[in-house]
Length: 307
Image (cartoon, rainbow, N blue to C red; front, side):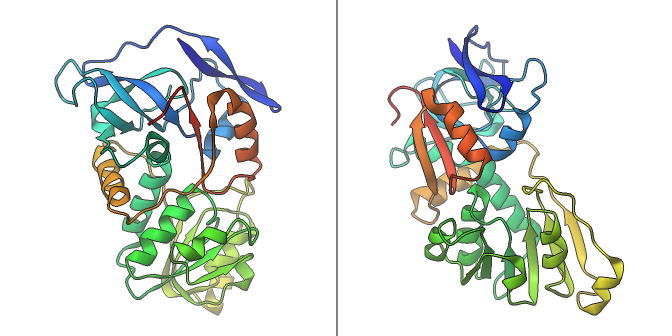
């Protein structure tokens, strides 16, 4: 079978290679991958790839071999999955605790856009606590996580202020429920009860300064790749006793959260924002555009005929 492997080259981050079809563990299904979605964090791993790296954590496709322990769906079932690696290939193995069955009304392209970004958004919202009637500031809002989080938080009753680099990158967020869209944290009109911060650098301190006293900042990324600096004494000018919480989405099982996302999409309550869909022959090009923030929302690559 064919899979994409890292090259270590910035202008051509992946290339095709022949590989043996993976052999599933007893609690894994073998999936014929029809679509996969790269994440921007994965593009960073490709800059200096570790030996043997096989990227790919977001897949959708068809089960062609059921789990030997009978823990998952039978062969012929359409699923979305979140494997630990290896998804940028014609076939991938996925633990049964990290898949959800797809109904007919959800395409594999939509489904592939769900796992990492959607699970992160769900778990971030839980970390934020009850948001109904609360003011929420979201930085880095134009990516996959930001679109899902904006829609979920607004539906839960939050007043969402979304920060995006440009008006074009924030165009869809208003439709998904954002009350205000700004293009710099400094333009956000606080104070806010909750800040969800993912850019790092100067943005973190600026966002922190806009919290109410005792408010919470959940730090879930550093997309700008610049370390943040916080001055203890600055907090005395406003957000005294603020809580800064480090957040990482990871932790199996992922199946229950995937099932929730699938249910929300099927019910018309969550709308994957897919800024680019292309054949996987164009993966290198798409990865570069994703790394350089030229894609709004999610990018999805398809293998053969996707449904």
